[in-house]
Length: 125
Image 1 (cartoon, rainbow, N blue to C red):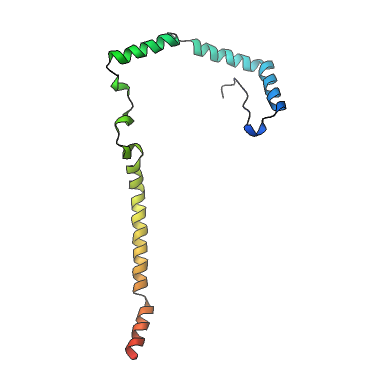
Image 2: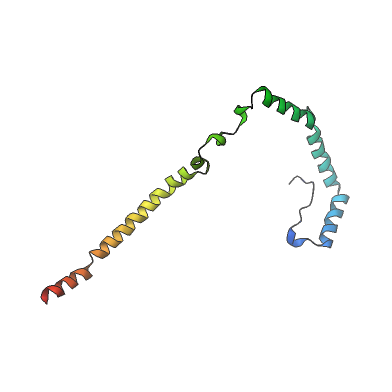
């Protein structure tokens, strides 16, 4: 998506495909322009990578661990982090509805006309 390379799929890897992709990247000026643009963007920084690392290390030391930069998920209980409370809220009504239907079905089977016929036969004998 950055226009800096050609993506090859694992199924299509062959000597010819790799060679053609390398030649395309080397010979097409579009790739060179995109790489130069990305390089300029990467290098356009107020500090070098080492200075940035030193700054953030010193920042954390100055602020006793910089707890204000920690993600909120660190302090969540495990059931909330895994969204188990949301899953329970979504599936509990469905489960209760299915249980209610199941209960009604077997309650209806217990009081079915088949039982009444057996009762009448026993009474006549």
